[in-house]
Length: 366
Image (cartoon, rainbow, N blue to C red; front, side, top):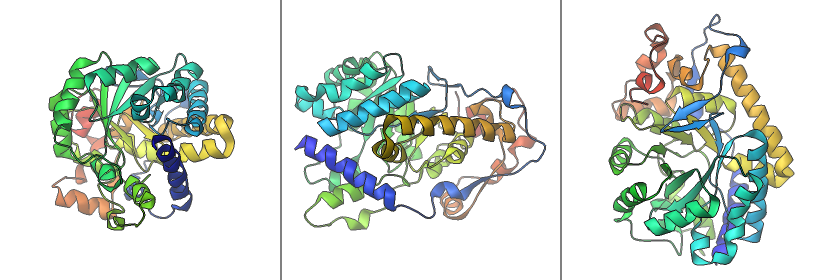
């Protein structure tokens, strides 16, 4: 049952991304163009640091899959692309491994193909400390993701229906494992209030993972005999909305959900993220062309992000948080309702000097 579900998730997610077009919440964010802001490309460094973690590039392949022969092959290609580009990668939830140890290789292949890379293991918020440690050991993981997915579980026919223990479990895992703990949503976003609670639990980093990318409510609804939960399509806050909502919380942030191209990466960094990740587009690329296609795409993204930073005058990813940005449309309306002042973002380059750090600019701390 678990293997069938994982294969179905891949199928529905791929179909969803092939159909998706039109407006994306990231389109409500634009940079103010300063024609003399540019610097020399050789002065740009993509290294990003957050929560005691250092990555050579502010980009990562976010959690996707594992637990069946088909998804194991996908994980192999993802890991090869990560190895060839030096980009961090997260495995999908290892819950299938807890239920059936015979699927271990569908996850372990990531470390086998990427022995020196930065790999994040992934568990759900119901996991015990013992299971969290097993997940880290399985992959010799450098960090642990804990995913929050109450809406997905609600729509999933066989999903969990008990969520009250999630907060205490996260705190126990954060105190009980020897690697950094990163809590992420699965595409419905992390609100300011949720981020404040997560900070109290001892997690190092949060991945806001907002709406705009893969919609797991829709995927689980497609798996039902009748689409009873169609009204939940689009539930949650977008990734840009979550980043703006997080001002002043002081928890390092990652951004995933709806990231389509290097400009969206730059936008996410400008709104306070330390790195940006994607899943759906990378999955589709692997299914269409295997590891070579994804490797080429990741290299292209890295090259283009460097080019954008050069034009914007950002020597480091953190410097993008000093660039002037405008907030439009529905995102501006969200900010107004949540009492978020976006006007200062449009002129912050006038008052920010080289001594100001990334999260100080956004309103938090490193």
